[in-house]
Length: 175
Image (cartoon, rainbow, N blue to C red; front, side, top):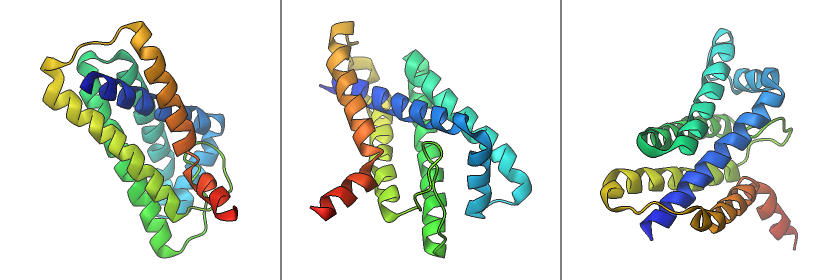
């Protein structure tokens, strides 16, 4: 069972950061502007921060893809990125700023509390993978490619739905 949970976490984290990376790379200047709009860093550091975040997201994807000894560092990096992103979102919310997150590419929707809940769920996934990988690594059986198919499908559905948590909750509120 732990092998399946680890595979799910690995696939979900890899897909999450791939979607995030590709969305931001469509308009990297917009992502840099988002960092500036958060007003957490000096304006002069926004370009470097954007470059570092994009690089870290890509490294996370590569770690999830390559696995083996890179899996634990990849989960740790994913957890760190989600904590940093969540901290920035929390600061923006506490200040009452009305700015977009642009977490998965260009978006005009202002940051909401549901963005923090979304990140908390994603952080649990990254931390869960980290915990399984670090504590149970010796006893895990690798999955065959046929076993990866349902795991990949479930992880894809989870990421696609969970990244839209705010919109889904809004939809249910209207019902």
